[in-house]
Length: 129
Image 1: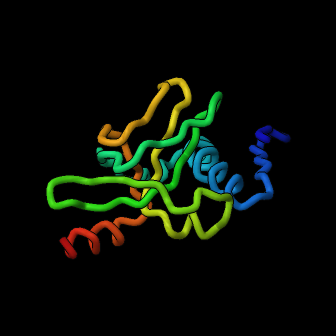
Image 2: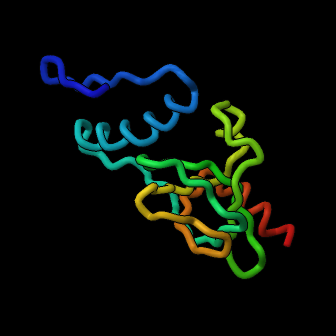
């Protein structure tokens, strides 16, 4: 829910943890930027190769949490073991891949854009290679 009451923005955030996190990440930064006239920090984005096919749910854009790894030449992403609606999935993930149902497919080996959630995890993975 978005609205304005007496010139002030009002945001209704859903109750399930996964929905609350996604709404907070996607809706609050633009509102804060507009009303505070100060840019929010954007997450770094990288190109990565899919290590597995991604399942597509019809009629929506999805913000899939993923693991990001470094193979010595570039980034790779793969889905979390359990794509559920738990807070653990948000904590365990190191990136987000936006999945659009209009694209039609996301296949293993394809390049995708990834928002990095935790660069420290990526740096640690790089040093292990």
